[in-house]
Length: 537
Image (cartoon, rainbow, N blue to C red; front, top):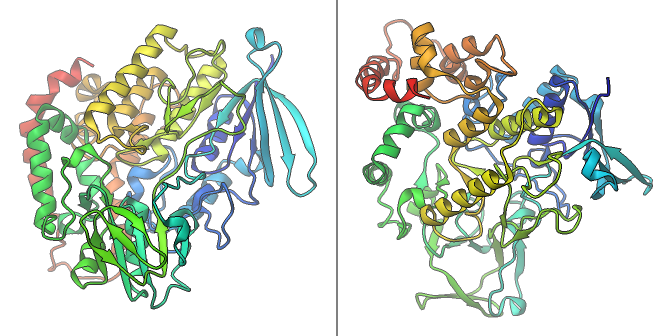
């Protein structure tokens, strides 16, 4: 029996699970990684490498460990709720060791080109040219399928500001920022208030003489931690909450905005945007309001022009003696190694079915993985994309017709254009739970909650009213994992375990434990509203 060979481009968060999914399906993977180690942008490097993303030295991931983990490999209980990048990398290495993934990775090897073979219409095969960075030698290989896991945080977007070329200070992109050394007592302007811009501003505000954070629209600011110190995503990312929000979107937005303004008044802090909370990516930052409150960060409006030493804003104000400008202005998406015309990217817009498959391709043997910006964790989506892609490569799952795929692509583009503020970063946005369900439905591993209520009502309530953790997609269907139920039942134990560093005694109540009864009441009321709809799925 012929065993298909699959090329995987990149050994980061998506590439690692791509290797494992290939092995799970009996395929033979070869992963090409141009750096000397796995982990992708989560493998921190002091030096700046063109075309390669890296986190900052201080970066802590924005999603909690139970929401972000691979679906059949829980993150250790002793790891923090929100992990520093060193813990994320350690988790990746544990995952790779557990499943023997490094045996299939060729390090220091970059992709030169990916082209269809001459017999592609009949074989679906690809010709891949690789270059070994240590020797400079190029090689050509033929593969039956390709998984592109190269990410979208590599090539920077540099907007054109009048006068920026005459500015005498230092100018860099947030892609190149690593740590605060060398910025002591500097006056720094950061342009852009996404997650990167917010993180850089907070870090520099501890050493710089003054940080200015420029934003065109403002932004809603979200804390990682919710009431009682619990991780916000474990509370809010649930099927129950998502269903209620979709039934009453305006009420949900007003409630969410009210909750955020209780933390701090966004208008008072010059951050309130004109758009509603769900119309743009929310900035997740626990420290930004505090740094504004103490004067270390000043929020400014959009930049109109630069002078040799200063910057003019569109509200007419001017700041002089600026030492450093950091452009937190996002990235340009693309696949420079791909055969021309195969996947066209225009203004960061790409037309792929489920952000994976090119509908016009004769054979579905090429899949892009992780080319999404989710309203939740990234890794569960890339993992499920890999599970789906490898089963399509094998022939166990068939893609819909070309017309159906185009219809899905256009529907998503239409929804996105109406839902989000128009800008270059809102081209690959996906709603976390609905998109996971779409992928799982295609793959045959979406839980049947109607049957689950009858068979295991406790588990069903955990899945619907509790956090939507990746384990749910290992409960049934292809790739079923026998440890999935136990992982779901103990997910809160692992979440809270790293906080238990000092014995309090039986007489001291742990805040949060009293939430159980309230959750039960909410679940009981909501059960009757949702049971019918879930049973019909």
